[in-house]
Image (tube, rainbow, N blue to C red; front, side):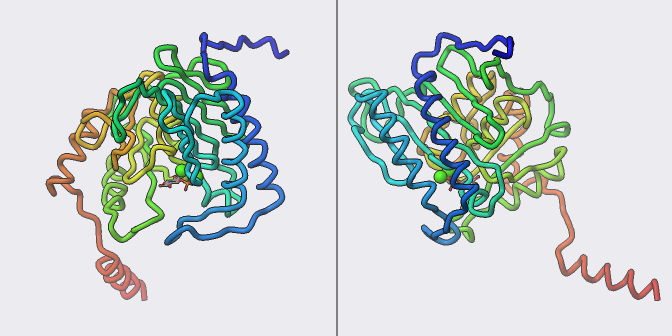
Length: 301
Ligand code: IPD
Ligand code: CA
Ligand code: CA
């Protein structure tokens, strides 16, 4: 024993789910060490034997621990979806990193309570979250109303008061890339903050927002298995999660904005301005840059 106090916050589902996430993360670590072949699901949407094997593992373990609960997994698991509780499972969030041997990925499991009468397509309430980064041995957990922990210690969002002092994160879709405008937002946020990170795991981006390593995160076109756990982590750590207009974030929303809460209003203002085409800061086009470069070279000779 290290002697460091580890809180359990009276969590109900997290203890068993954490054991499952740790086992799943251990398998990912083994797969990474042994190396795996990569297949394409679409455009540049990658999948490996690790994604499928680990989803199967989680599905089996959740079935043993919570036999009544439904499961909705990225790699196709759809079980007991009429149940009152439903796990959203991403067995490997950050597959592209994983496939390239970049050790930034995680297991993500979020539990939704869907009281009897909740219609298909209607959200229930997120009640438990577990995100495990096996490469750093970091376990992020939360339950609704009971707080959020990082390796058993309370975590909270940052206290950064404005975007100009913030470090923020985003991600880009792996499908229909030509239809996505996010590069414009990337540019604008870069010019107005300490920087934008694109680390390749939406679940870890949310977990990092929750523990204050970054101050905000946004992305287009995510799925419930990417976000379910991370949303609850951010909310229980004192942050805010909405869509880009400040409305309630739903699991099927195609846009997510998470922050420490303090800078949320400023971020929403920027989204609103950008959608209206207002206040964009100009930067040189590659052609303009090339012309200046040529001029500089000509002057030097
Ligand atoms: C992806 C990652 C990435 C995000 C993509 C997701 P996957 O999930 O979370 O950061 O930008 O939009 O699809 O495919 O690695 O599970
Ligand atoms: Ca994912
Ligand atoms: Ca995945």
